[in-house]
Length: 324
Image (cartoon, rainbow, N blue to C red; front, side, top):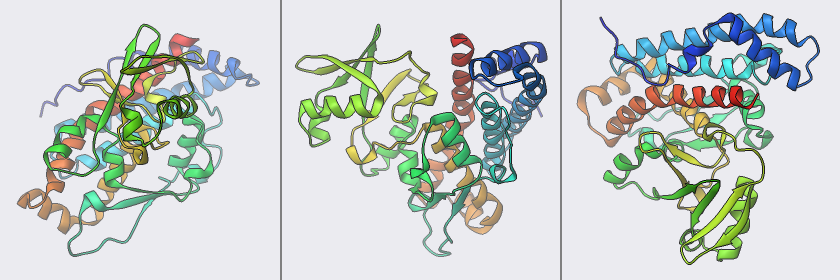
C-alpha cells in the first residue's frame, strides 16, 4: 500500500548524514563547553539519526493507517523525535533509567458517560515528559504532578479553533500577534479580556514572554525581543498555526499556560494511545458510532499532529543549526 506523502520531513532528512550530524553535535557540545565534545558527537551522531529515522517510520505507518491505531504510531513517533532533540541539550541522554518511561499517567476511567474532552492526564516527576520540559524548554518542577484536562491541551492547538468553535466549546478564542520586521504587535483589546489595565498588560506580556515594551497606539502594544529570537516551537506561551502562518496568544487569561505546544501534542497523543490500547470497547464505539463530539475532535487533532509535530521538530533543529 502506497503511503501518503508526509509534510515536514524534508528538513529533518537533511540530518540523515553521519558526517553532517556529528559536526552539528560537536559544535553544539563545544558551545556548551562539554569535555570531549568530539567523542560525544561521534557517540551520539548515529543515535540522533536513528531516533529521527525510527520516528519517520512511525509517522509513515501512521499516514497509511486507519484511525484505530494511528494514535499509538503517532505517540511513539513523537517520543522518538523528542529523544533526538534531547541529544542537542543532554549529551549523556539517557543517563539513568528514570528518564526512559513516558512520564505521564491517566486517571482511572469511568466506564459510563466517559468523555475524552473532559479527561485529564498528570505529568509525573520522572520520565521523558518532565525531562523534555526541563532540558528543551527550561521548565522547572512546577509541572511535576500537574494535571491537564484534554480541553486545556486542545485549545493550545490553533488549527483546532474551527472545530471547537463549531461545537460551541467554551472559552476558546485567540488573539493574533502581528509580527512586522522585528516588532511584535499585541492587540490592546486583550487587556479587557484579561481584566487588567493596558499598562499592566504590557508588563504581563513582557514578563511572561521575555519581550521589551517599546510603544503603543490606540489598537496595539508593540514589543521587541530582548534576546536573539528563538523558534516558535520552543515558545512556552505563543501559539502557532502552521496552515495560516499566524501567531496567537490565548484570549483568556486563565489559558495563559506555561506549556509549549509540543508538550500538549505529547500529552494528547499519550492519552489517545492509552485509550486505543486499553479502552478498546469505548474506542471502537466512538469510531463506529460517531455518537459524540469527541470523534470529530480526535480525528481533526490526529490529522494536525501528523503534519505539525515533525514541523515543530524540524523548526527547532533548523534554528539551532542556523544559530551556530
